[in-house]
Image 1: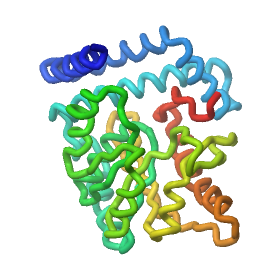
Image 2: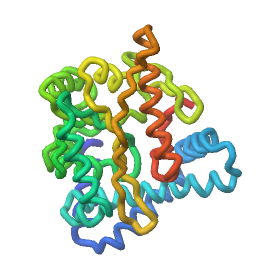
Image 3: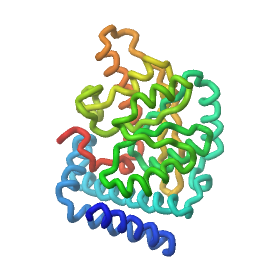
Image 4: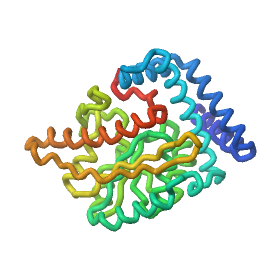
Length: 294
């Protein structure tokens, strides 16, 4: 019964986004997320703790203001995902450097005989970034967490994520599929900024504190010599987006002999790439996640 109610609510929001002015949806989502900020004390407290730990130089008032802005930015992401789903969002017009980013991706694809591992995070509108990559000639095997609601996952989330050619796969079934894809010089995409399980992970520095992080990217890099490319999408003050496509991270920790230490050292470089972009746009990361198991 709960699944059906949640599924109906999501469909209701999609219907509302289809018939209502976009400005109304932005205001509605902003109001709802700030309401959650006020009512959900545990999540709000976690957000403030994470921000305080990451930015010790900020005052209490600055942290509080930033925590509210995190929720406001999330409301924009939710709104625009709804618009993307119903066809009321122009990806090319929304991304300011669309042409340049597409040309850069084409060069990366041409120089990746062993495939590409897109390494990214739950940052800004990560679903928009995935759509852009697929539309720009870099469709991926996109790895994600299985949703809690099967109806939403099967009928809404998965079809949406596969709209332009990406293949959505849950984590539990991912490794063999990633190996198969990279063996054929294909592309895979992973968001590595959430806490990992005990297997195939290590505690790696993230904002100066150990965070359990998957070693999958490093393992695949060592095994297949694929290009590890950090890619993010950032929302500017004008509401438009910029694709951030970093140079491939070629580091394979040759100076370290121990396999686990080698993988952890490589993964530290990946975490640093994520931290760098978050520090540039601190309100656009998913700070309400228990990344450090606080």
